[in-house]
Length: 254
Image (tube, rainbow, N blue to C red; front, side, top):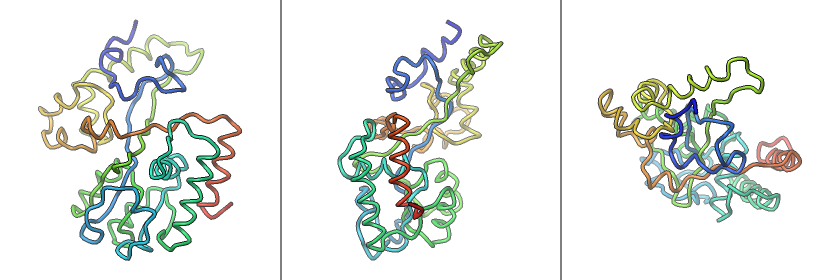
């Protein structure tokens, strides 16, 4: 009742998640995509996740994976035709096997966090599993770079607003969260943070602030892009441990 803007303006792609299907416990704050970051002047145009698993001389030894388990395993699952919204231990085994084979084939230079963006800019890497938020800045520094969501799909991740159980001022917190679900306010936020906006109408409001940002698909993805994104499904505590244990092999510590 305290959040009419949230109810009216949350984008459909965020609805129906397995861990909170009725959206009673969280409100998306900012999101990002995980996809293909690359330098087409070296690799040519890339549209498929298959590049991460193909020993092509244009990017062999200059490809980087992410240290975030859900993103790297998620992209591997999409490449294999598996569904990362419903991950199983068998999926983890298949994904890790594909990732390990790519390392054995000499495709992978390293597995990194955000620092992969610096490698793309320097040319030490020409292909990377990449986060859209990083690529917004990387493209400013090196305009030849590109970001793409693979034809097989990409991952969507979200930082969420939540109110601690027992909060003394729950109603006030709800009003604050709802404030940011006004399209014109959400547009002001996006003009500064450059992540993906979860608020309907913010792209139209952005046109008055900065028409270039309003057209940026890394901040306001098209419906076609959103339709190809997947949110990694929930894991039990035991399955989480299993996924991390298997992924440690990709990190080189398992």
